[in-house]
Every structure is written in C-alpha cells, then in structure tokens.
Amino acid sequence: MKQGKKKQGKHVVLEQDGPLWRGRFAAMASPCECLIRGGSEREARQLAETVAAEAWRIEHKYSRYRDDNLMAAINAGDEQWVRLDDETVRLLDFADQCWQLSEGAFDITSGVLRRVWRFDGSDRIPESEQVELLLPLVGWEKVERRDDAIRLHRGMELDLGGIGKEYAVDSAFQLAGSLTDADLLVNFGGDLVARSAGAPWKVGMEGTARPMEGQLTFTTGALATSGDSRRYLLRDGIRYSHVLDPRRGWPVADAPRAVTVFGQLCTQAGLLSTLALLQGQDAETLLEEAGVQYWIQWGNDAPVTG
Image: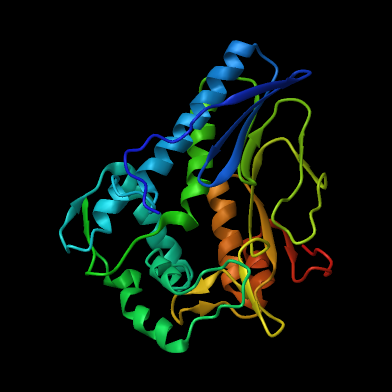
C-alpha cells in the first residue's frame, strides 16, 4: 500500500546497559539500533536521534511505497524528465557501476518483476507468460539520463532497495560519528557499520540459515548479509530465492542461502554480498577474487564456509 503524507509512528527508545547506550527505532521495514559506548544520556539520545532522523529521511525520499516523494515522481509513468539532486545523482551513478560490474545482473529497474513474484513462503510460482510480459519493462540501459535529470519509459520503475539500506547505514554512521569520539555502532536490520577505540564489538551474522551469533569481533568495519532466509517460494521441494536475475526474470539458480561480507563500508559489503548471490554456484569465486572476508551458507544444514 502506498503511503502519502500520513504520519508514521516515529520514535526512539533509549536504553542503558552499563556503559552501553542503545537507541532503538524502526525504519525501512527493519528493526534499527544505534549503540554508543560511554558518554552521557543526553549525548546518547542526540546521537540515536541523529541516526534515526537520517534513516527516516532516506526512507522517505527513496521508498517506492510512497506517492509523495522523489521516487514516486520518477516512477510516475508519464515519460517526463525529472530533476535530480546531487545525492540522487551519486546513488544512480553507483547503481550504474553495479549494473556494469555485474554485466546486467544487478539492475534497479527489475522491481517491476515483483508484480508477479511474491516471496511469501508459499508455492505460488508465476506462469512463464506472466514473467515474459514484464521483461520489456526491465533494463537499466533503457533509462534516459542527463547530468541532473532522468526519464523512464512508460511502465518502468526504479527500485533502490538493493542499495538503499546500506547507503542509509553509512550515511547515518557518518553523521553521528562527526558528533562524537565515542565508540559507535549503527545497525539497520542486520546491515551495520561500527568503530571502536577500545574493546571490539561482538556481533552475530543475522540472515544466515543457521545463526552464528558471537562469531565475529572487530573494532572498525561493516557487515552486510544477503539471503533468502525470510523471502522465498517453495514448490515440489525446490526453493526459489527472492534474488531475481533481471535478464531472465526468474530467481537465480543454485544460489547460496546466505552470504555475509565484511568490509570497510556497509555499501561495499552489501554490494558484494548481493553480487555473490547473483552469481549462483560461482558465488565463492567472486568473493575470493574480491579479496574480502566472507561467510557463505548453501543450505539449512550446510556448514558455513569462507
């Protein structure tokens, strides 16, 4: 359901556990938190509210579920040029790099395929004809761009869901980090970035089919996970991942259940975890060539490798 100007419940809950402050809120359909080690309650609340405000700003601006934002104007279907600000130009440039690196496997125009693919855990697989009808609306190469404007063909849509949350994590972390020297961790639904001048942070890797809580400690860096533990279809013993190959319109075959990547930025880690899933059975080859630390799981009972 599209959301207009109706105000959503937005508030930050601040909790203390010894020297650790935890600000909790909801954004981007995910539980979010900002952890601050040390400092006063006043500072912790300011930092948590800064992080939440940035998450809500980006969500409001780029959500495809609203009818009153920039994304709605771009996706209006009237084939008109839409002016872009610098932030959006940078995001679209990044999406273009992802599309080129993946040879078209990562495509922010592929969201229209969700009209027939609904990954709700059921066995409702669309007919091939339904998918074929949508493929003419998919293809980043069909999007027209000027330096500060964009125009889509009628029926096409952009969906920044594949990069938006990780971008929001990095942006909120940068904003909050500029306000304090305290140890800081920003976590939006399992995609996170952190820094510490003292004791390392200890985190689990949410999203894997078999959680591995507490297996990773680090002082500075980012973690992102892509997988199908929550969004999938299942028919005749075949599990269909929610990661779609936009060139075919069907889920990627032989994809891992979950890929977690450690990097310096959440955007970088998220991109690599998604690109790995898109490689299917060659996921580990891509990660090895990228030279990053990663964890990959191929099935519910499969061991974690990486």
